[in-house]
Image (cartoon, rainbow, N blue to C red; front, side, top):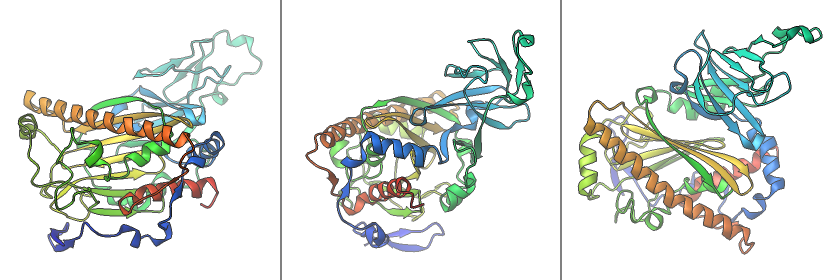
Length: 408
């Protein structure tokens, strides 16, 4: 046993040998079928029961801070494209990115600032509230009512600066209800103060669930990241990066990572740490909602919103992952890291070091994910054999199954 301190300064015991499956016996301990869930048929069912009905994170409000600011988020699994715009009244609205004349894609990707959006096919024009305001040769149409032919709305809500959409025309619950206790715990985390964003994106030749699983445990760290993070998350006290704390909600998850308090920094890492945030142990100054166990050897929390969104929070920065299904064996991923705006060149250097280190870690992860896809596609193994530290994988796959089988 190791002594830790909770969020109120109370001493508590931490046991890195804890069996988390004892807290969630309903998940069982048997091998979990996987290969059968990578087919086109299963992918189509996931589209219909999960991605077309869940609240999906598409970005942050800082991306569209001013009137007319917009960006486009394609959701390939649902064959959808969503246009997000901030209106004159300050409201953020989502629309199906489809012209109401001949159903051409209205905005061909990207982001920017516009007061009106004009279709490149025939010039129909819509304002930032989605209203149809211009029709070339309008007299040639029969009884056209522009007020009834605006852009089709997509349910859009904002939580703590994060923009979510729901492709269901009539969502059965609000975003707040969907996030539930998970959202309540992180309600006071200062996301809004960390507005400097660095982003990566690309495609992974693997199923989206394999991508989620790869980031849902620390068991792989000693083997996948010996170069990029040799001692950061492991020590003799916690050799295999077992979790500090696990919380499984009906759909969502939180996993607290251990940090080695005796990790020796390289000269470059030490220089970066002098001017900016790095992953390190120590609960002092932890923002509200972070480090729920109050463990002095805390590194960060991986917070997962079902089905495909991660918000990983550390001491003075946070980063996000979005895994967007394209096909049963292809996923588009977006990674963003957020910092307090730098005031000096030294702080900007620290940001650069942090984002590049994160990139290197991710490249190591992506390679293993693609090899997992190849291994499962061979048909040699149909199931995962999961250990206790991989309980979040078990929970996520079970939640997917419950949705696909209409048990929720």
